[in-house]
Amino acid sequence: RKGKTPEEVVKKYLQKVKSPPEEDCTICMEPLGGPSGYKGPGVGPVSRAESVGRLAQCGHQYHFQCLVAMYNNGNKDGSLQCPTCKTIYGVKTGNQPAGKMEYHVIPHSLPGHPDCKTIRIIYNIPPGIQGPEHPNPGKPYTARGFPRHCYLPDSEKGRKVLRLLLVAWDRRLIFSVGTSSTTGESDTVIWNEVHHKTEFGSNLTGHGFPDAGHLDNVLEELRAQGITEDDGLTE
Ligand code: APR
Ligand code: ZN
Image (cartoon, rainbow, N blue to C red):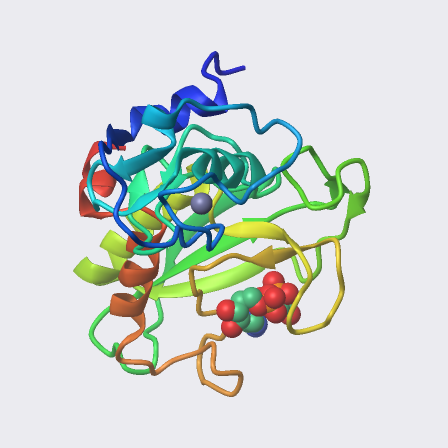
């Protein structure tokens, strides 16, 4: 277990604010000059001087207690994301269940990428029991359609996306447990916020090729999870 309390984690990313602006906190919608509107278990008292903080990189300001409450509602991995501009502080991780990610090159071209071979990624996640980081701890989750096969062009950019997807996998950000928007089933393994192409030779589902913008879209979605080109080099 990490030694830091939620208050310590949040404080690490904040700068002091001497006089709060005459604005509302966008977490609780109450004035920054007054107390946090957040009341709940685990919300302790806080001194006047510390009641509002400024996130060090993006500058957005919130009640300290509102940020702590937000942190406690997440998976408490030591990272914090600004709810206004999505700037990530620390390393964001997800709640992807246990499983396996493999890949290999297959000697075929994807529609729209005639000059290169294809990378096939195979994700395999078995069903299991939800942990404390999942919506219903202790309850089983199902895992439909595994192994899931996904495709990328084996181009320079495609290989870059693969490197970053490997980082995303290690940070448990590719899948989540929740309700499938396709099937409506709850307590099941679902894709998280990073799009994958699961159709190889056509695009009947909208999750196939050709799709000229796909790699750039994925790079943008990875960036929104805090994964950038630098990560692909170091890990
Ligand atoms: N292939 C790739 N991505 C998909 C697919 C698909 N067949 N279906 C949905 N998505 C995308 C959606 O566009 C959305 O962004 O995944 C995200 C989450 O959608 P859900 O339906 O909640 O995800 P999930 O239930 O995991 O996927 C449904 O995808 O790979 C297949 O076998 C899988 O049939 C299942 C389908
Ligand atoms: Zn607030």
